[in-house]
Length: 328
Length: 277
Picture 1 (cartoon, each protein chain N blue to C red):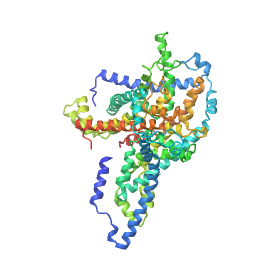
Picture 2 (spheres, one colour; picture 1 turned 120 degrees about the vertical axis):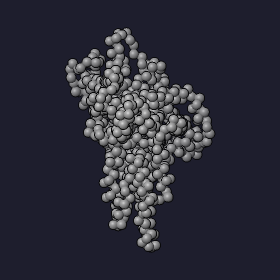
Picture 3 (cartoon, chains in turn orange, red; picture 1 turned 135 degrees about the vertical axis):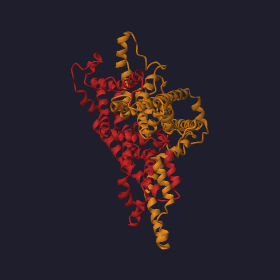
Picture 4 (spheres, one colour; picture 1 turned 30 degrees about the vertical axis):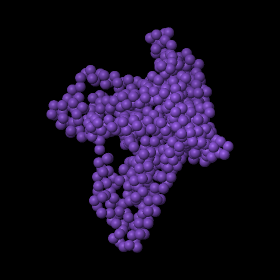
């Protein structure tokens, strides 16, 4: 798709547009004016809605993070909002729940980058190269978890791993006195969550890789094979380089997706035991909506989330350049 | 093609695939079986098939959860926001792609940046703004953010797609005296069906399953959507297992059916929608 788009772009520059200028000055200004009106008419609704509910709030959030606002009317004479500098950020960095949430988020990012993406790629490759049978079936089985509502997935897996769930029952068959403390023990409570995260999102990467593998000319792979390349060498020297851009896109999706794992954890553990399975988004939610609202802190957290994802993506791009990725 | 992968590799691959299959099928199977047991039976028999099948859990869960209302709300949010996203994205994308303007780089750029903006970045300001504007506990207050959240990807995909439609088509329609809105409706929209489908599918699955925003913006029961309504079964009603499982099955079914019907379009949509900012 990229290539065709670029092609159309250059074509547009080279062919001279049927410019109204040739028709005459009076007609021209009329046509220009109509063009402007049409542009305004077509663009304004989209821009208005988007700026009102996305662009402005994003900026507003950074602004609020520098104040001590904690509820009540935004313009009040009794309790005016005052500038708080970076104090919310300092408070955040000193809060032990911040480091717990950040650490859990890092686990999720690592599991996504080094679990979901490689698994998704391997399975896509296996299906694409027809190394196994029942490909449509397997593809559906791996993708279906993604379409089910996150809340349903969260409650379902919470039940599976809970003391009354099948996991416990099965463990009891091996060891009748085994006690299920998975969700009670702060050390183990993240494990089921990470497993579910791998299970849930591998399918997305599978689909993305599969679609892009199909774009690679099969003749190139065949030619490599004829030249004596093994399956492994074809993968390493032909297919992987061709997919480097897609891998980076997937990594970006994984990073920004990992920072958004709110609903699943909210449904599975709500951050418990003792907020040990909290993540940054849940930490932000707690600051704003649980107990007395601390909107300054909550907005500092959300600003941190955005900054963190931008920094990680920037690092990724640098690594990509160093590694000599051949992205467009 | 000759088989050059070793037996061991293939056994290993099948193991991975079967593990995933088991992890998908078994929980769903267990959930459905458990939903046909009474809570008393579930206490005694947690793994096996129901000894006495009962469907009582379903009507009870339906009534307690108020699923009529939940379904209606979810459908309203999904359908209105999706139609608006598709329509607005196509019009803006058409203008960005085919009408020259000095404003385009800035305006279009503002949408592209938005692809990286997550809901977390705007949730609290949105909540405060919606309070200030008197939009909390009104459907519009939920639908508008959903539209806005769909716009960045929508505008990006539509602009790219419409750029690939030859300029000559637009120009000849111009020479025939058609206005731009008319060209959008009769030339661009019919040709942009694939991108509109992609966009619609991304938006339907996104909004239908969305939880964080609607949970904050809808405190009134009559505005809650399916995910929010189902969560109630894991809180106050958690020990009533039979009803909880029935509610989960009810919550899971619509998307499974949607996937079964639109499997190929969903697959295409997901890979086309994988764009970075």
